[in-house]
Image 1 (cartoon, helix red, strand yellow):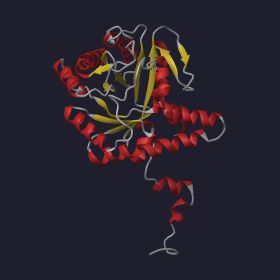
Image 2: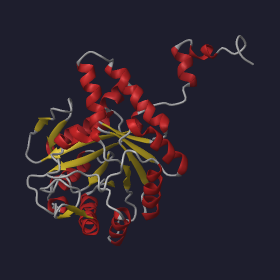
Image 3: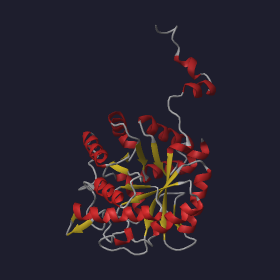
Length: 322
């Protein structure tokens, strides 16, 4: 039957009925809030390209974690800005490093908040790449050992989950083996399984002070033109022991999120990245958009595409709006 018997507008006539039949619902439980942690005390340094986001010293990060938890957001993910960097990123696995100390401080103050740590070398290397280099090449296999040391140091400090974001081949299996060998068999791994070489990352690289000193990351991050390759990458990471898989970025890769969700029976995360956040902030500042409505529409689209978990810099604002 069709019009006039069928009138779809009947189920759109008021907010109550729209809410009853809504297919996709956002809640604070969906979010992970990223934090940038740096050395020092009392530091709250504005990130110019990411309005409302800051580099925070550990004491300030603890306070931010408390506010996140009070909003009902279940988890934070930590990115570190060390005081010193070197060619091999040795600071990444320093037991007294900024992330290791931040993890302990946050878990001591807010034990029920899940603390996830980004596992990568780009913030810790003097050259800004995500692995060990030789000449102008990023070496895969030597990098795995450093990443495993980093992950192990985070878990020893109290991290609930580790999230390798480097895109080296085989790193999930290598990290899983090391964690298991040291008794951390119950620590989950969120894999940045389909991480694309995206232009949307630029504000993050300012925030994390991780701009490569030469070249780019296209030899290890995925080509934005490739869709089927994401399924291969995700399958490999699940086979190696990933418990949750991630697609990054989110906006321009909703098709990939949907493909991954339809193909695999594991939780799917999506990272709504810095460039996506900053575009909304910039347009709102100019008065061109309704920031809250656009924010919620974008986050809803990511969940509608299939994401079970959304990493977003809007987590606090979205939680308040919901």
